[in-house]
Length: 289
Image 1 (tube, helix red, strand yellow):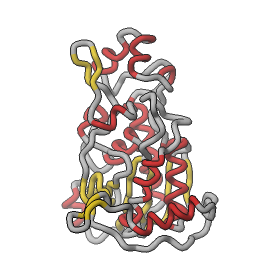
Image 2: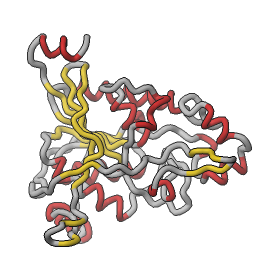
Image 3: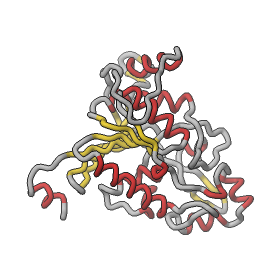
Image 4: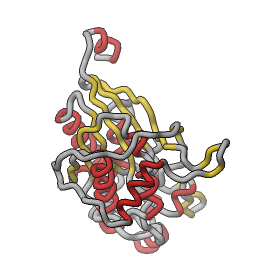
């Protein structure tokens, strides 16, 4: 059934899926990582907290994330600020890199000759030794997110994901096969919004960010006051981390600035040009995942 036929049958409860990606992370060696992963960098914490004014515009009922380091920390931050419970699920992890976990691209090329060529020849089907292919991780992520949507029908839920998971989740609303996943960008600390009516999804926004870096009238600005106050509570040692399935708590204030989409590439697969790999965009030099 297409969307038109679906809507003509009458009103349906709306389930809102909010997606963001945890990061930037502490990755000075530019290594591949999945689980247990790497911790958020100070820049990553600030960027994620800056999303609070956007998130407070939705009646978020629950926060979900992988049980990896950056995703778990981001979930705790969001749950505390929004006053909602959170749950960590291994099904939401990034694709497993197997023997490549913790290696940089030059190290992969040195230890596994010809592997990058095989990778780029079959981006979705190739799996590192002991790891997952994009196609396998994609199917796992779709099943997990679809189950969460069924559990929270008629509500809004926030999923703190990663490159592969977020694209797989968006493919529940878009005709996007894993082979074409890199055509849909998913940046660090940006917000994507999908409304589901039954099984049918409508993408409302991609890669939204709170534009607190510069105000033409006032010059460079810091993060919104709500995010600054939340950061001060952390520094002063007064942040109480919520337990999974904990109760609601008071959130930060609701003042927000306008949002705009940003378009930096999400690094995942290198281009191979004359035998040398070249990364996509400025973030690739920090995170080759």
